[in-house]
Image (cartoon, rainbow, N blue to C red; front, top):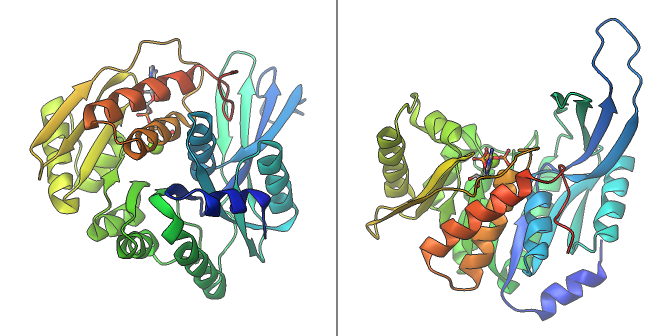
Length: 309
Ligand SMILES: Nc1ncnc2c1ncn2[C@@H]1O[C@H](COP(=O)(O)OP(=O)(O)OP(=O)(O)O)[C@@H](O)[C@H]1O
Ligand SMILES: [Mg+2]
């Protein structure tokens, strides 16, 4: 789908391409309490464009960056998501899918407890995946950074992020990766410029619990030796750290202390800030500081919302 904002992306050299391969409509239902075996009255409903890549693009634009979101969307929910992106003025390029975009449901009680339901989402056909690769290849020459964030939809090969990272290498574009499980394990072989696991994702990659800070730091170094790149480990309110084994770099910093009301998307806000600092040529210490500050800022806001400017 052509988009006026795409023209802006093409005109601005060295932008940031953000792939959101499994985006969703996020819906929040507020209820007094969850009652099993009873009718639960929904007090209010809020719907917005969600998914990790969408969150990253939203924060990057807020920080003054120039993201272009590339998202496969389908069905009525895909059309709704496109409308939300337009309303937010978030530059996007859409790839049409035959199956509908998923709707993730968040149920929040008056006491602040939350239930989350994430459906599997559409199955992407081999032909649609080829279309995603083709469009990525077409957009990479105008990009300086590629952000790969979130789970892979059904139908994509496990090494999808590895293929995209290698494609980015061909165009001299740096890849920032945030995903987990087998998609992560496959992708790091393609040596992304920076990966951002949280401590659980790092332990998952290691295949064992990482109980102390020393264990976490050693695991981050091992990961950095594999990617020969940067590894930023986020740990919620605890100190995050950034390492690069090749450069002999290691730094840690404490996120600002805040009254956190929501953790959904904190890692995405962090990644957006890191991308923005890299784009601007800041030092790695600044990547870490800006990332942690922005991640903490996101926890003070309702999911899907930005600070009012
Ligand atoms: N309770 C908190 N207090 C202060 N800052 C927080 C808190 N939780 C998260 N953050 C900030 O957000 C950043 C990312 O948080 P976290 O490590 O939970 O990411 P994540 O697990 O990848 O999140 P996501 O759900 O978006 O994937 C942290 O490094 C920190 O800066
Ligand atoms: Mg995360």
